Image (cartoon, rainbow, N blue to C red; front, side, top):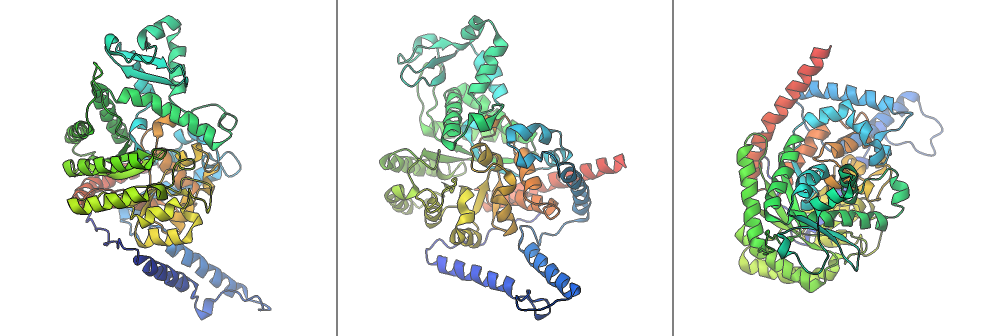
Length: 541
């Protein structure tokens, strides 16, 4: 499949006027209904049914032509596969028409329905390209972490006497920090007298899973507090060098198991350490990560085509700290240009500093980048909020002005027509993470997620899973299911799925040459998957 590079995007603020003009022209074109099918006039006394149906058909056609993948051609094989997929979808929609529809339920309540779904099985079989929005400490199933890390005799745990926060650390017994009363986890489990209950409590601590999420998490702040607590527990384990290697390898294996071929990991550069407590540099961490990815890719030459890292600061950090991290990112990008993709700010957006607070640091970094002849692409989390016309959703405007390459979540983009026009004209893809947005209480019913609007208006998006391990999943299939079933009935078909997968390569941080190689690897997987699905369906007839 030939790779078509993205058109060169203007990085100057003067392009804003052009973008708005293009958007306005597009809207006028849509409104320019022909005289034979002009919209109904309020003063018209009567209209024939045939004329009404003609006008109705034209309006529906105009909207259909706006949708994502509207002009994407399908091969005969893809058409056959699409017929099978849509039969499964229609049957599932009919089944849930008057019952619990998974996208309308909280994911914790609907997950078992999705797992048993024929549509889910179909989506799992498809090669889904790249996962472009993943956080490094939440990519691996928690069961695996418990089975491996917590049964290692060198793992210790403690509870901070001031905050009560739990943490884990691998260590030789004589090398533990003296700031906490550390307990050997293997001995602790044995002393508990019930290993099953002990592990179940560990699982609960490292996820946000509960039987009744509405009661357990009445506000965004409460669910975010539990969410961040879960992430912090894993962070201390993953930073141990031998486990960092095993964990990262496992993360890529879980992606491959879900037919995902590429990943971009967001990392906060938690310093790696060894069994004696020695701490290693971020350059060492990137060198090690690069080798882990290279080894895994070499071992899976037909199913995985690599990964990259996005360096992240925390939104609550003071501006000077972010400035230092930008300097460090510039150095790392110079040292590891094929690995370090760019920079982002993470953590809960509402209480964190808005992007404008770091403007001086970004402008200073821009000068440093120009002097070094190196660019740091930005992949800003922005618009992960329910607020409108506040500092927090103004992050969307600053992300665009700072020439972000993609926007993480972008939940609030739908509320800002200027931003919507600019991300479309500049081809700034929105990294949409449906399940994350629901679990973290941006939306209850995923049929109301703005991702549906983005698809209807052909705003560029990719589907990703954010922090899948914290809600006890891996890969992309569950998020693809929620989008496919929740955001469009008969009109959202395999063309849209294919376009979203193409987007995950097209809008990745890979070079054009890497993208071409990725397409060349993905396309045979796509054809093979469709052939197997069609053959299996025909065999059942």
